[in-house]
Image (cartoon, rainbow, N blue to C red):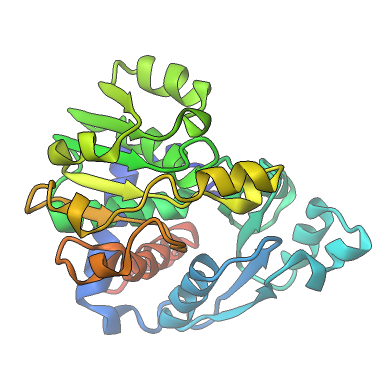
Length: 307
């Protein structure tokens, strides 16, 4: 039995196998429609979510399986003081696999240590978001045809953005990937990512503050929102929230084949006018998320795949 806490839990060959399976699911969805007819997914979401929770649920239902769970801590026994460890022990009696989101870093790991079913980390605080990373990798590979030889710009909240941290850790394993880290001083990438991931692996990167200076050289621009829920005081959030707004004027500086990704939800960091640009890929990214979660569920459940 395997769990998924971080993208690094998967070797590059294992990762490629999941992405290949997701691509086949995209092309042949009917082939997989009954592969999980007798399986149940539990979605344990202690923190609000739209895309991730519904994406997991859609993925399991597309495979013919069933879904149970809760969408906030207030609607679970956590409100009565039940521990994550006890909750997963109980849920293991009801379901075959679990996706857990929690505001505390490491909570899904704690669950995995006592669970009798595979546990997928669906986001833990500002730490990791591995299934979003798989989604991002599938999106980039599908649009650009490769995961190596890319210059990737990460823009916005790089301090608290768990999607950014996970994506960097995954991409440093590919050849000739360069990063342009675009953020204000207060929201720069954490030192452990800078020192232990980028510098330790001799990855080329630069840190800049102006999006306009960076955008002409990028193959991928990964926008993020400034996350209000991660700030301790309202004043800092208000000062930071409009620091970057991607609009058509800034986009005119980019390459014709540069794609824009965003883990969503969007607040106002991407102007609505950008949605019409063929390089805007963030809603395609949502669809890729369903395919990759279907592939991950099949892989962790070790379901026999159709020919």
